[in-house]
Image 1 (spheres, rainbow over the protein chains, first blue to last red):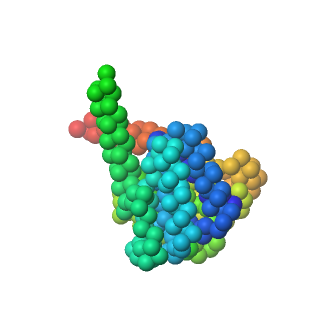
Image 2: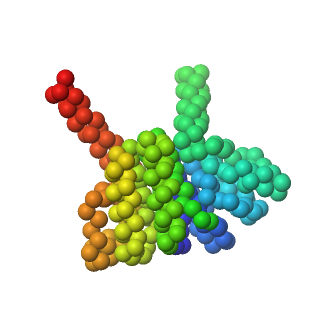
Image 3: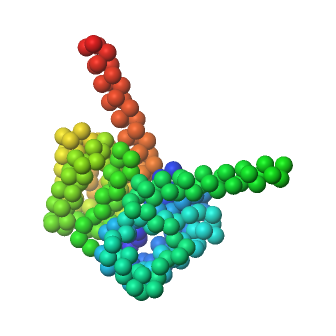
Length: 132
Length: 132
């Protein structure tokens, strides 16, 4: 199976990574995801990596890339379900994913996204109030 | 990667099938899923098969099994994202999945589950009203 499916759930997109990300698959995931953010006006992207037991610098970089691309398109990225061993490896590799939000599971990730989008909306409302 | 992750979202569980289901993986998915339904008191199970391009009778049977097991544990199963070619193959194989609900995508599947659970709750309320 050649593509990782991107599931739309309301204002969010959900990607579950279950297979090893090799070059071409990772690139097509990046492309598909930014197109999907654009098409659906998604406000948040959830990346579930609970099935990922082994991580390398390539995968860390792909996650960072996706977060940066989504951010430019005004969507927040939350990585969920990271296994403790993966967190250890990422930090040991020097990849602490500074721009990526994380949550323990999908449920908590959605709550986090909801709170972030609320906060952003409030900021915008404040801005509008101050400038009206 | 040896297991298919089961994601909890509120009252629902979501499973995305991205890899070919061989015997052991399918059995562990069945076991994990019924345990998860039991543990989380989930009311619905969404199985996303949008990444599945080729289906055989084994996979059709596994989906039917999961639906029957969940039903006994009082959870509805909705299969979402089926590709047209997969629907054609299933019917040609004589597997029309009679007990399985389907929806075009995750969003519509969640709406369907919500409406089913509402209906069930109303039925229960009616029953209680009639017997009080």
